Image (tube, rainbow, N blue to C red):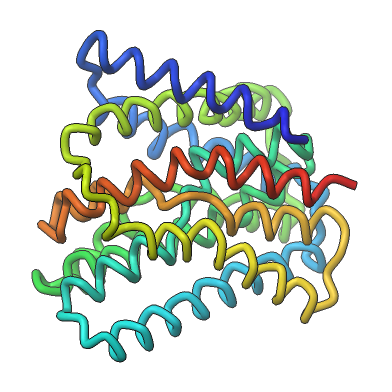
Length: 298
């Protein structure tokens, strides 16, 4: 399963080199991924998945439990250290929210196949909702974060794609057979596009990265090491086993989401420090994820 990391490194690296050689329109690629490809993947996966509600519910519980535990730990640590509001927000958003889409889905696909991808999609749906509400709030709470968070969530088609797929399954309404294959094809395109986009975004962020990385060692350690340890503890607590347990631990170990750097820049929340955290966590994750995949191997 460790070999699942190699194609991701190559594809992300290709995106990085592409941006270094010529300036790419990251906004256009990101819009295509967010507003077209990801909704298609979520819709087709939820419509056709063989993952049962009994399998999905514990996975959703792990997402919520890990996120809540990281929030509680972050708030407690910030209070003990008497962090100012912006420092507390920096610590929370860089530790709570992982790159489940661009990194998590391809790793789950390459390591565990289509079944792993179906489970990863459920994780992505939940964490994206949390990221576009809680993360936006903490990044922008000094600028009326609640309204911005609500507008962001309502503008995302992924929620409506998921709702439509679940409605069709619940009501057993037929979906045209001729329409599903192109939707599935578009959805699968988010895997390579997302990895290329990650490389491009990292290349663009490199100009903001500070060489003084001491300020991001702690949040990176929480994100890459403590988060999967918490997920493993909750997996054992809930008595989960098999592929669901492996995907839960794997997804929780992903590096800080690139969108966090975008939010930090948009709302002026220590953008250079956040960019440094995202950049260094992503590079370090190639090692930590390889080690984790060895531990998760049967």
